Image (cartoon, rainbow, N blue to C red):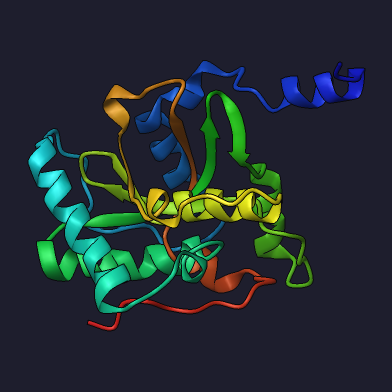
Length: 218
């Protein structure tokens, strides 16, 4: 039986604000947050109403995964916990190979209405303004496309690593995947992304208490 504290912690990590599900609203708010922090705004990025077909999405996903795991011969460990660096490199890869524009986006993730990666805006702000702030990073970084689709290359590697650190061994191939979420048709019990800040300048300026490695060289 759960203790009162465990029940409270579980409830406090659930989604209570319905605006969390409105990606377009939160993306616009993230643009404002970025400006308020004195960071550079994004240029020439306007939201467009279009959809990738399932075949188009799968083709792009297959090419990216082939590059990572077959060409560069990387492992899940090379991607896990490096969401900001990997997103930056994936942004360049998408532009070069598919002419797909995207914005690096930082914020929170919920799965089945529970916090998976979560950090308050006040903490994000403190990381930027205090160079000595080096607490564990709990936010997440992904890419937002012009149609507000989300492409996330490190969510499943992060989940795999969490299970491994807790003593549960899982098949690697089941987590060598890309999360591609159509935020216009969001599954409230699935992965829900909440943008807070956009752009890579934030990542460059904060104190990151982890060692980073890259993956795409082509």
